[in-house]
Amino acid sequence: MGIKQVPLLLLCLSMLPATAGWGAEIHGRSSTQFQSFNNELLGDERQIELSEYLRLSVTNIDKAGKFSIHGYGRGSQDFTNGEGLNGRLYYLYGDYRDLFDKIDFKFGRQFVNLAAGSAIVDGIQADLKNVGPVAFTVMGGHDVIFGLNGETGDAGNAVIGMSAYLVGQKATDLELSWFRKYDGGNITRDIVGGSFKQYLLNSLKVYGNAKYDTTAEAFNELLGGVKYFPRSDLVFTGEYYKSYATFDTTSIYSVFAVNDYTEGVFRVDYNLNNMVSLKLGYNRQWYGDDGHANVYEAGASFRPIEPLKVNVEYDNRNGYYGNTNGFIIDANYDLNKVSQIGAGFTYDVYQRDSLTGEETARRYWLGGKYKVAKNIAVSGRIQDDVNARYDNNVSGRLAFDYDF
Image 1: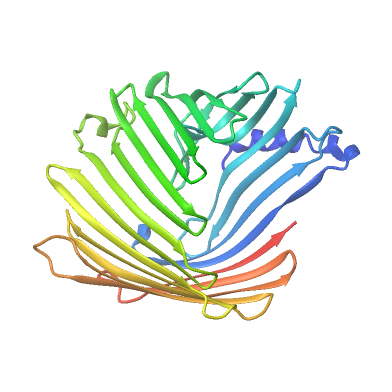
Image 2: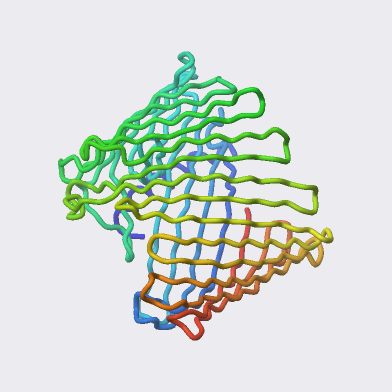
């Protein structure tokens, strides 16, 4: 978990003794997982590890019920490849709401998500509300960056941002925001962004997002979409998406020229009845320099009998940088109210470019879940990958979940 997290952890836990008088409630999930797999980063050596995922929420801490604490982290012990004990703290923050009936704020490690950007920060987020049709958010703190072996970066990594957004509008969502990153006092990202969503005529949804990177002087993301649902069981979707890869100004990659990526999507989702649902899709992709590809997708979900659900999906891609086509079949069967089994098969045929022959990749998996009690479940999955790299690549996971 690292030394950096200890003061933050102690700060939040130190608040708990004072809550006993109000009868604080603790809820969450503990997931203990045993995993076995080939570690590709260590020469495909077999790795066996035990991991613990813990998510918790502490509520009713104060008499008014305004303050709560939320946390989520992971610890793992490798037994075979010398990686030893490792861990990550994803979030641990205090949440105080309705200060003067106008301010909510969170302090500690948390995930912040604005239209202009998102990050995990050790810091604070404050929301000003109930001041009219527009609410406001400001946030800032240390920018938490995870690497393969834990956290990277230093105290000079920081993030600040703010946003304004509509509230109380049933059919309309709108946000404008600003997001900036620092590295040792240098501005590495400076992005302004916006998002909107509008419902029209009870059967149409129009939405979009945009981000403009002022350091690169370019839009690095544009999205516009329309969903038309003439009936509750039928949805038509059309989307236009464009991205331009931008990098932190301190990154070596910021000096390289890159192409835009653009795609247009059309999709239809239709639920015939409680037993059958269908989907069809087409995706046109543009990579710049006259590179393009076409992707066709089709899928169906069947429930021939109540306990059994079968999903089938097929996709075909042809064009820039090779061709692929393949299908996925998976099924889940409820043996009874507390037991479920599942199995699946994936088959792909791909050709990386015109100078190489076709290759295939297959995946087989089998899994199951059993509810020992209302709040306790055991689940497992084993799979085998067979492709150009592996004659077989078996991996497995056994999990014990406890809700409290």
